[in-house]
Length: 103
Image (spheres, rainbow, N blue to C red):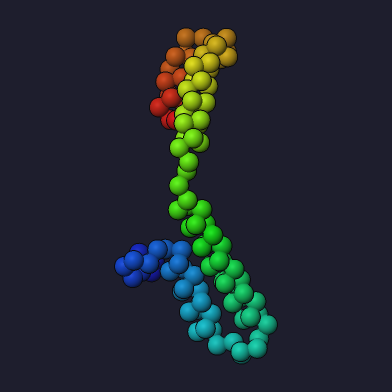
């Protein structure tokens, strides 16, 4: 419930890491306690990794990759009945429609 009630504009992973850091400070470790320093280091690494993931997510997919993927999937669905007709028989029509809908 705490994640649902996070401040507006803050995404859930950032909020969780913020709360982890706040809980770590509330635990009351000594400043030079090695466990606290290690936990701070791990939280910092998680924040950096989250930023890297957000950069990857925000990178647009080139149009050439999109077209190539669509053409490959079209060719795969076109040749799929020839490969599986012996195993599935007439049920291949329904299996191909299901796969085409899923893709």
